[in-house]
Length: 492
View (tube, helix red, strand yellow):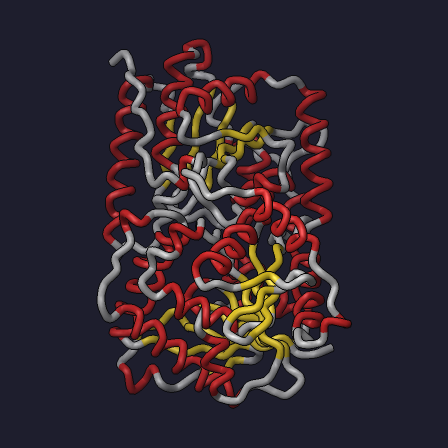
């Protein structure tokens, strides 16, 4: 079995990675189960002369960032430009001069440190938007290995992506990969649409994209979870606020893409429209901080704290607080017990690559008495989890009604929905995600020999979408740009 060289923005201790969630859990799983090397940023910021030296500990090789790199590459281009653009938030993107040059320079430095560690038989798997240029920098150093790229966040509509002044350079960077993996079919369609309209790429008969004298494979690989980690959970009765109380759980990083103000407004509207449920239901929102040095994140925190205070002040009683707002991370093992003890999971991102909280919640449920997943149509998980209650988080009043329907759902329907959701989650688990991507990368690396190629199903379906589409004004509210959710009027 070839060694897999994983490259990601952050490399974490395996024990800490298991608690961190998201990308870290997925990559830690690969390191544990395959011959591998995990390379990337250590999370440390050091003077430039110290940042030039990598550190190897077992299968992990880490590199610090200098203060300038951290400010301009990480906080700057990656999280103040690419993150909002990929999430269709051009209004908060900071197209500052100099950020892109630093972004390229850091990728070039990382490639120069990684290249001596690569063996001839290695398979290189690069992860996420921080590292789009890494393959082209490795190719310039003579690396001929198979190189795949996986984007863990959504790819935006092509009209949004071309707002990036450097979009054509980024497309050339993508062309250096053998395979680009995305979370959903919608993301594949958006990328193909951009390559056709933005850089005049052409789709070949076998489903690959010809651009810049390269043949690129694009396909969807929905990321999954290690189901066994969650099915062993037991209900923790101590987590219920009071006798007969039902909990609605939300677990989201404090990010403007997660739809947290819309969630709070919908819950407030639910309490206003359904007074019989006051003192019967609580919303527990766990929102750990993230990227606090980026201005847009301070704004969303202030907005959320104001909303929580307003709703609690309007509806709360001495012995009942309707919203529990927790601005810190919860231990992963504790989270699974919270999931199982909650009647509803309310997952309402305005745009999300996948959202593994939705899958974790379902896997944590008691099959005999499962809770109900309410899921935003704009989460990548909605493409797979059709048996959830799907909502438009921009529609505050409709979401409030779905909360009521979820609370009143009969046991037989809850069981049937849970069985259907579990079948999907077990089929597309973390191991299948890893194996399917590496199989596709193995085939794609022979991309100049069409006799060895099988067109991915995701490409075929995306091509059908493109052939049927006409570019008109988008009807998806997230593609019309950000919109403020209506603020319900409470009696107080």
